[in-house]
Length: 452
Ligand code: GAP
Image 1 (spheres, helix red, strand yellow):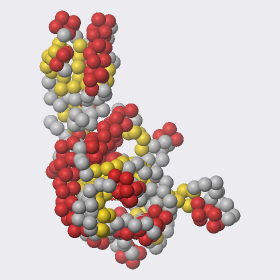
Image 2 (spheres, rainbow, N blue to C red; image 1 turned 135 degrees about the vertical axis):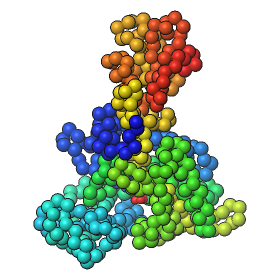
Image 3 (cartoon, rainbow, N blue to C red; image 1 turned 60 degrees about the horizontal axis):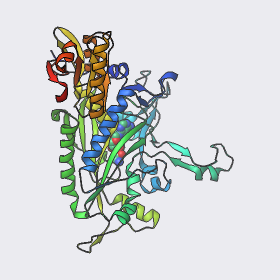
Image 4 (spheres, helix red, strand yellow; image 1 turned 60 degrees about the vertical axis):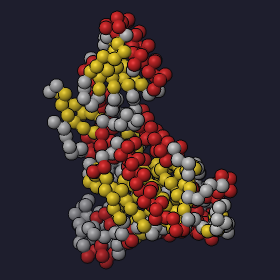
């Protein structure tokens, strides 16, 4: 009997219980919209990011990468349009002063909803139930910070203003601002991509749904530079390749992924076409990632704001043009959440209920768990330690468990997604074979140590 509807609370509880993900600043009561990865979560996250890196950067000949600073010259955000437009519609309840995203409270409106449109819907405040709304205000989601020896309450207002900069809300601008450096040092043939993995920060009005909407997240982005007439085929190719990546490398079921052609009024200010890949998360369908055609918007803005030439010279044809850009962008946390949703299952083995995380082998925090059948038999422990060492040398992430009885160990490893448990018993001492128990089927087979 397999549970088909995964409950968000079950996944949140498993993540905390088994050391995958904890609330940020947990010991002080938490910090909304922030999450910490624990010992197992950090391995999962690293494996996932490494799998992305291998697929999109190492295995391709048209891809380069950068690792840019998080704090950038504030001109970056003026030029990119983020200072002016990276905002959500904020509405405040006149009765309880709760603050909300207007487009998330009212039906059928988007981020450019007006006060009149919102009030016409007569929505009640989710906190106090009253309907006494103030006007909609634009709330810029970038986190402000001050750079240099300046205090926010310094009397020199000009100095304070000059010191303001932001934590980057997308990794993309660290790529665009390095486009010229990459072209001048690597001389890539167009089309080519520049990839980056890293933190991005957004002061979300209402962070929610576990790690789906965070104030601090990690993004994996590619800016793919093409000839102005080459964007459509690049868009289609990248989309297909991403679908392959999500199913083959991340183990996501394709029937849970849905393509959404984003209408013009819902697209980001820089995009002429966006396709979102939505995923059926436990609490409903949500954006997992997006592919956007950013035209030459960013490079032209940088050229204007910096006075530098962003043109590309085609070595073969001699043509000179400012490249256009197709951008696939995905959040690490949303991808982890999709992977966990797909992997989480509850079923029965020999009449006993269990929770099992059917993670793809390349993402499972541990490839193997090694244990002696009995921990009070030194000869079994010694042999098991040898096998443990052998597998560690060969596979890296291997865990040791000699706690409780063997059944409890299996349950624990099922919950953290370990594909195989290796048990050393008295027969091992005789014939150098071990029991290998499979996570998904719970079947056991005898295998020679040398064949592991
Ligand atoms: N450079 C383009 C860009 O940043 P976006 O649609 O705003 O576009 C891209 O973000 C992806 O980053 C999203 O599809 C999502 O996976 C992830 N993301 C964005 N905001 C997030 C948040 N607050 N928490 C978690 N992930 C987020």
